[in-house]
Length: 187
Image (cartoon, rainbow, N blue to C red; front, side, top):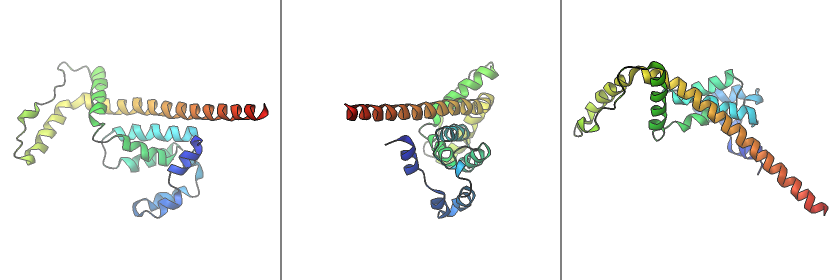
């Protein structure tokens, strides 16, 4: 199945979005602007890159911000929203580790960043975990604050390249397959 057809099958339509209570506004906005929704290689890759770049920054409204950024840059809105799902509790540790490392390269603080010992948490009183987690995040400080946008830019650029080149490879494979079929029929 060609990549464009697969993307069209997987992505919801603006009409589908109009039936979802929280996304009704997006469906109304996208219906007269098909270029924001079409499954085109550059727009989908751009949407994935932007969505992942926005999704790295821990905000409660990542999907809405990704949709707004995709609209602003004329990228595929569905791909941008879906790319924010790549940042989840399972990918948080590697992404934040990358962010802290990148931030540490730029900030170059004298003391290295250390995680608090997990055994110091009072496991019988979970209410205290929030304050301990807040102290731990505050100890990460500047490297994390500087590194998160850098990690977003880096991962967004890598995601753009991966989607663009992967889509191109699928197109080339399909083209080669069709040419081989024509050659077999012609023999």
